[in-house]
Image 1: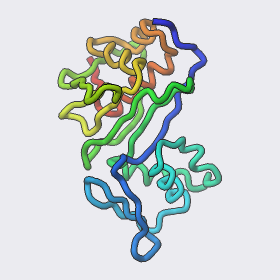
Image 2: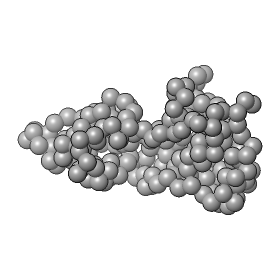
Image 3: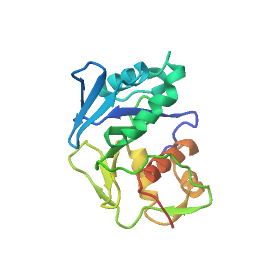
Image 4: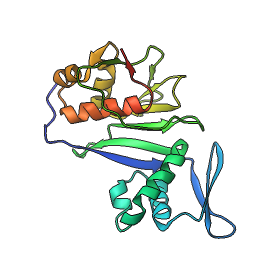
Length: 203
């Protein structure tokens, strides 16, 4: 495998699940988000929240761009997105113009908090034994899922799959980064997303 340029950087995108639709409430001040889980109501959301959700309904966005001009409302917007985490898809991209690395998709209305964590370099981790790999259809990427997780992870690119398969046996972040032709930051972020989805366990 040819080593990917060390200058490549990752970025974090947010979007709403494909089936989510947004409508104005009857009083005009609320937003109604309808999904397979039912309906979520936001009463009088701030302009920042409205703008972020409008963009996220169209596709993945960088929050920094979506919240530009709303600096005083950023924390409120992030808090609201945390409450809607069962509707939010988190995507990890890399700035090499080859498309996203992976996406984490909620598969339950009662999702665990999605918290990105980078394990210490020498701590042994692995995929839990109950994690399964599948390829739903050609060209759609590889899917990691578990009955014990409220998320599934779609691996869009081989680089993400390299990292995931390296975790089939107990290993460390340092060892995986040394073995793969990827910048350490990319390797760490992929593992961080898998961990946030509940698909990485301490060995």
